[in-house]
Image (cartoon, rainbow, N blue to C red; front, side):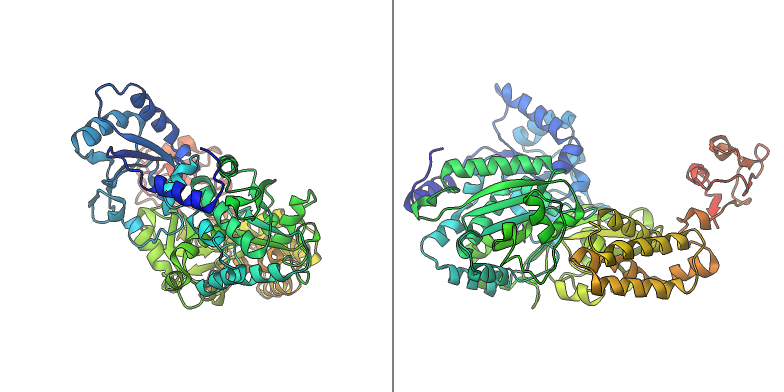
Length: 616
């Protein structure tokens, strides 16, 4: 592809690409990190082998894309334009898909998704409950675009928003459009994007920067990774538009080293955009210049904080600075810098193409547009879901996520990652938006959503997140460093039966001190998982402290295993596997567990097919 030198040339070029149509069916294979983990690369190889020896075989086009969201049923194969959705495809299925579906127009019944509730077969993605309530504005092109081909992005209307802006839209008007759209940052804080843009534009300094935060360190969260892997040009286009509005010629994408496929696809996208004249000097002959570099982070959770991230780009240790120094005035290398996360930047071309009026009709009064969540944990349908702001937790977990596996009961959902809160069943009808989540002691965060069932101990969960945050804290400020250490020490004591009633008040006081006095958002929000579990699951804390019992049967020091004699068949399966030989009894007679020898490993309970071994 040759470099494009003017807006007029780009317009002609894009019309050529958007008009391209092929009568042959297209086989689309999802191959993000989740798909590759489940064998998509082998499926791709199988299709490529068939393509290499077509002969008289049915003609079809072939496309490899990023993640389609429904990670639970990867690898996914779609047949377009019919929209046929095949799930859990293996290389052994490829010949049949080609001969039956491509060649004869027949459906391979066993590869269709079946609704676990109704048993209904779903032919197309739109028929599947997982997709029905979603609104795929940002992630939808992941299903259509080969991220290694800029041509695919152009066919889908890519860079049209940039061209529209460069035709003469004034930066002030552009910022006003983002303001009218109501776009809030999707990285966690929910700060209005236009305010950052305007402040950075008005800040003193000839050299300024725009930065994309792709650090994404929350356990269970991978929304940004999926967008970078599946549609990197949408982020680049958003950054280009933001740079034009602010008056910037240099940008950075800060991405975790643990995201090799995302890094690879972004590098390819940057190279292709440069060759086409969409990055670099004098873009499309308009006099506007902007280029992007990739900065690879070492995986520190604290580097998701803006100032720590900028320190890392500078080659320094990732430590946050006091918030009274605003990064829009003194950020990267002490120069004005605008930081937005991956999903925020990906929204920008959509707003320019569709208009602020259209965009602002989606969502709630204070939270516009859609949000991508990673729905994980004790949930039937794990994956990425893009939903309009204002949808309820119940709709996400039960209508989209398919509810809780194995007939177990829903217990809690954590939103906002380690900085968020755990919400109980009584809040399932809560509207999911920035403000409502904050009101109940949680937060939107970057979009992690971890579902828990009745087997989860909320005290143990709080201990897990405190341990994670203590390990990830930079240790720079006393409230965070020492506060987390004390919180973890107290909660750990509670889980081993050494908790005291006065510990509950002490935990509240330390958590409140951290919120008030910590230097950065990591420290100020670190108590959230603990305080929210204490708020909504106080009975569990009291059971651990007063009764020395763990209701969920998780905390080993507070549980005992007992064999119920009326259920025990005397098969001796548990006795054979017990590592401490703590189980005894005659053959075909009820057995017993010696509490003095039992190490509470749980192997016996997992082994017993009669349900005779219970936690007491």
